[in-house]
Length: 91
Image (spheres, rainbow, N blue to C red):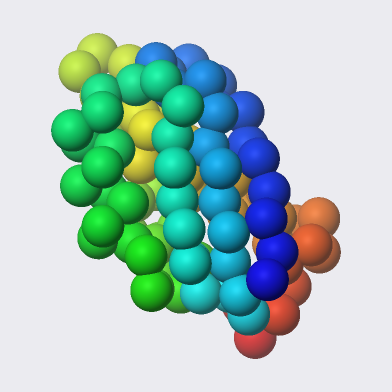
């Protein structure tokens, strides 16, 4: 199992703690942000492939902001794919 911390930009959350195994999200926790919404997101994404979540949540806006916590979650997964840290999850 791999664990990583992502620092989202332009949103209320200060950090995402993400655990995955073979590209499947095992645990997601957000520090800061809208606790109810982020708890719901956690329940919805756990047990699903990172690539599926990245595709579905990317581009989501929060009010007038250009990003959102779901969008930043997508960004975190794509950054892992691009750096090769989670390359097995997109195979």
